[in-house]
Amino acid sequence: MNRNSGNVNRIILLTTLLVFQIAAAEVRLKDIARLEGSGGSSIVGYGLVIGLNGTGDRYRSPYTEQSMANMLDRFGITVNPNQIQPRNVAAVMITADMNPYMRKGSKFDIVASSIGDATSLAGGTLLPTPLSDLSGIVRATGQGSISVGGFNIQAGRVAMRKNYTTVGRIPNGATALAGADSTTLSQGTLRFNLQDPDFTTAQRAAEALNAQFGDSTAIALDAASIVVTPPAEYAGNHRVEFIAVAEALTLDADSPARVVINERTGTIVVGENVRLRPAAVTHGSISIAIRSAPVISQPGPFSQGSTVAVPLDQISIDESRTPVVALPEGTSVGDVAKALNSLGVAPADLIAIFQALKEAGALQAELVVL
Image 1 (cartoon, rainbow, N blue to C red):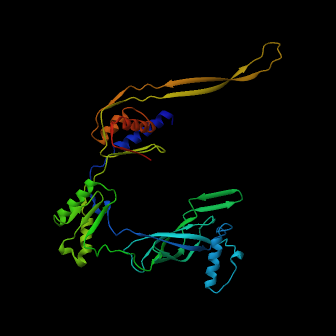
Image 2 (cartoon, one colour):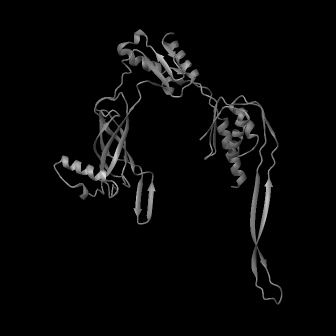
């Protein structure tokens, strides 16, 4: 494939991304908002992973030796920490998010991350580890076999690695000892918090709730919060029924006009509400090619010279000429795509054009560069 065909393919792909526009569709309230108090709480713990095949902590992890000595002391075995060489043991930190509605005995996943100089946690088993919240209350215990989903093999100076082997996951490795604090269902009023705060969306959510349950049910306090007072018929044990019905309500969520650009990958995503003011754009580039070809130089007759190869450099300059293209005022994503792609430029150049349009005040949208 030549260079021109590659640019054409990229332009076609970008055109597809720009023109692809999903019609405004209603979304459920539970997909754009979260009930206050229903978020998970972070829990953390310190533990030991055993059973490693010589890939555990070695010389720069004195806390592993101390932890092993403390563990053995609980079983009536007294050893000197300085005499322990834990090649098959690694110290790890355990992290997880605990749902507030979990009850005693509930299982959930945990993540083990090495904090020492271990090279791999593959094949290891986490010893029973207490997991506490930020206030220090033990909420769960964790243990089980670690799954790393990769490998790290070294033989002399040759090494092969797939993914990160010093971080692993233990499916259903934690058992809840007590549920997290949650007073959502016992409160007189409920509060829905939008994941992407927006005044228009908050007002539409309040209107949808009032249309379903009555005019005095919901009030949008600001761009993120909607306070809801359940009707009398949903009091007591019917609170869960009210939340289920409220979360299933649909509305047309609004979004700001935004153009997101990833310069590393050449990706451009244009939001639905992006508009263009009239502007004139021209784009041109200069291509410089330097070629070096050997030229054989022969010595003169009866001379003492020798045949040599002399490099001959040739420089060619190709300046592409693009006419000035007038961009009309765009009223949709499709109009913006057609106007910009009429220039016939590559995605990397379109990024520069978007940035220039923003500086000129012709792009009526927020420009986000990743």
